[in-house]
Length: 117
Image 1: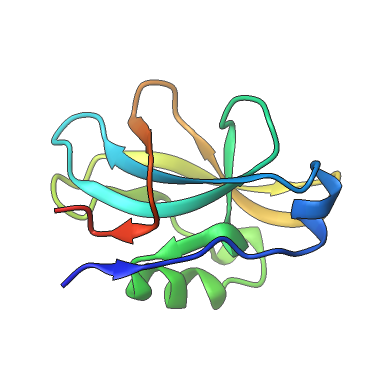
Image 2: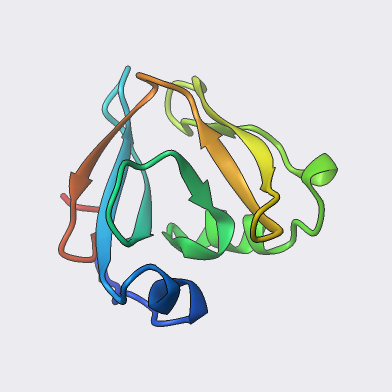
């Protein structure tokens, strides 16, 4: 059953101009919807910060347990198992994130509903 999510307002949202967009991220190979993400500010989506992943709940609880990059695993499509992103530490803000692989994912604007169906 789809659940409706809202964007969170935090220090990073405010630092990037106060605007947020909810994005549905899907595997480019099998089109499986992988996660719902809150993108703050303008510009391209280069990395996915762990604290901005809103859904699914099992992925959110998994990434919330990560404290260091060395403990993180690659982000893979749960359907076809294709690796979509690699763990990274964004040094500028000391935040854990996933670095996206070019062409591995497709993004689309979302109204906060996950899964879309």
